[in-house]
Image (spheres, rainbow, N blue to C red):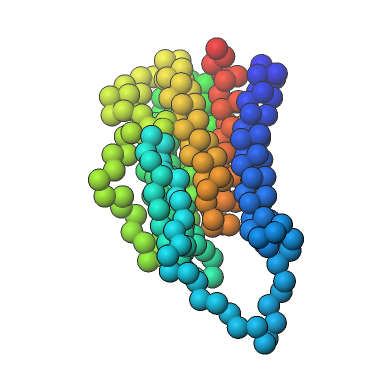
Length: 231
């Protein structure tokens, strides 16, 4: 089982590190001149040019959706800490995603037979509750709503159906442990994919650090749960 867990962590680490390397490379290239040499630093005598109004930026679409175009100012966002549309989308999706994880975790104390399951549920409650508060504050500080009009949160990766949630609530003992591990593992995998996507296209540093933490911590929890219920 140690080897399996190591492979899980290695895959997630590559998924995190490689996108970050691409982002760093792209940002570094953006600091170079058109001929590949560093751009000259502006001097006080050199006039500044206004941002072109006819420039558009390609914004990657959500999984299964086409890319869109946006003005540079929309992608960078406003304020001291720039953000783009994908940052906002990630927060709006991750709040209900975390909320469902909390719903599952709150069932464990009275239903789980395995103490490790109860310990994992305790950890989820202790970490994801405050994380929801952080994400809501992130939106509020930018004057953004929590709503995502027209979006069905049930279609997000890892989200469990109402029927599955009712079944989990109705089970006890070893049956609960088995179902909890299966559902939470799938749920965590969805969160890891969402976080890795943000690390590829997001621009807000705070959210990048948070996404990195989500991917790392939930990969560790998947490893612990697979020790309870190996394939």
